[in-house]
Amino acid sequence: MNFTLKTSKYAKETLLQLQASTGITPNILIRYAVAISLRNNGQGAEIAPITKDFSDGLVLNRSTVTGEYDYVFRALITQAAGRELSDDEYFPGFFNAHLERGIRTLAGEYKSAGNYEKFIRALLLE
Image 1 (cartoon, rainbow, N blue to C red):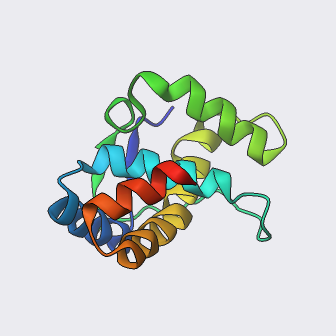
Image 2 (image 1 turned 90 degrees about the vertical axis):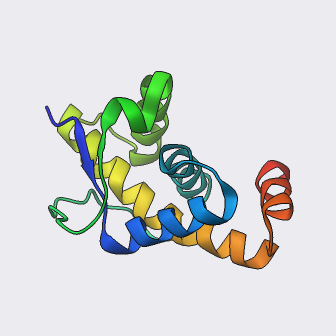
């Protein structure tokens, strides 16, 4: 069982940029990114678990990333996968795949919004 999430360099840089702009910590931004990826799950491309071991990104503990909502994230990711997932498939595999897809959308949302207030409103209204 793996309790460590290693992000890509792109995800690390994006998370740190968003944190600097919004004051929102990376663990919360990761939750937003995964939620956005899950929301957009039915819109085309299949998602496959990430098995690559990133060495130049952030390294975060599972309990820091998912917090008290680990079971909720697991249920949502399992539902999106359409099959039962082993613990290692769920975290970090599918969780990281949804993070990597969702962080791109999240960064685009912030860029489109232009500032923190509009960004939060856009997230809440979707």
